[in-house]
Image (cartoon, rainbow, N blue to C red; front, side, top):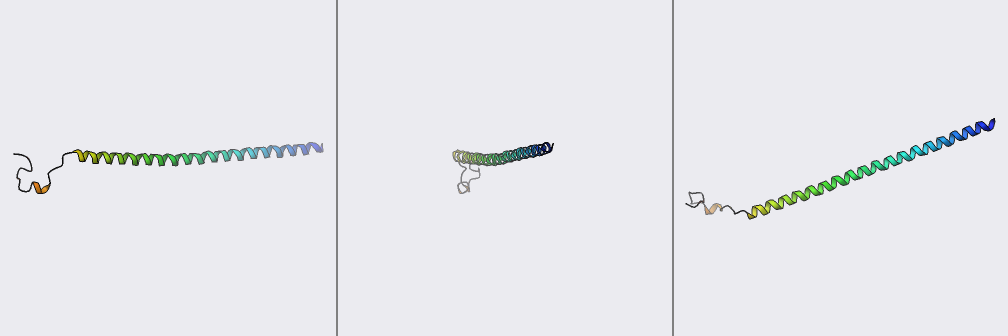
Amino acid sequence: MPLLGVRAFAAGVAVGWIGRSAAGSTREALVKVIVEGHRAAHDLRRTVGEHAEWIEDLMAEGRIRYQESEPSAPAEDETEGDVSGGRAA
C-alpha cells in the first residue's frame, strides 16, 4: 500500500507539470498572436498614411495642372484705365 501513495503523488505531480506547461505554452502563443496583431495594425496605419499622402500629392498636382491650363486673368496693370473691366466692348 505505501507504493500506492507514492504512485498517486507521482501521478499528481506529472499531471500538474503537464497542465502547467500546457497553460504556459498557451499563454505564450496568445501573447505572440497579440504581438503580431499589433504589428499588423501598425503596418496598416503606416500603409494607409502613405497612400493618403500619395493621393494628396496627386490631387495637388492635378489642381496645379488645371490652373496652368486655364487662361490666365488679365494682370491688374492692363485694366487700370479700362472702365469695361477688361472686357471687349
